[in-house]
Length: 140
Image 1 (tube, rainbow, N blue to C red):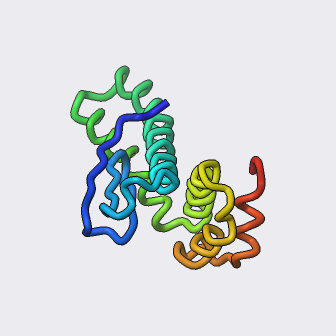
Image 2 (spheres, rainbow, N blue to C red; image 1 turned 90 degrees about the vertical axis):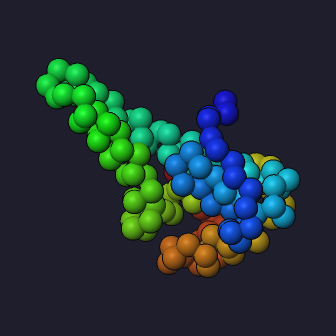
C-alpha cells in the first residue's frame, strides 16, 4: 500500500532524503526504484510512529483536553520519529537497516555497496561486515 507523500525533485540534495511524508530526490535518481523504495520505507516508518504515538493522545484528549491541544499533540508525535532517528543511534540504525532492506528487495546484488554506505554514512558506529549481517537478517 502506498502512503500519501510529497515527492519533490530538486538538485539541492546529493541523492535523496525523507522528512516525514516529504521526500526530496535529486533529478539524477528519480528513476532509481531502489532509492525510492528506501525513502518510501522511511515515510512508512514516520506514519507508523506518528499515529501509534497519537492514539493515546486522542483517547485522553477527547475526554479531557480542548481542541488546540490535539494539534500540538499531533505536531509533537510527528516530530518524534525525526528527532529519534537524528539523535538516538539505535533508532537510526533500526530505521536505516529496515530502509536498506526495502531497497535490497528491489536489487539484492548490491549488498556490499549498500552495507558500505550504511556503515560509513550514518554515524552508526558499525563496520561493513556488521552492516552486511544486519541487512541479511530476515527479522530482528
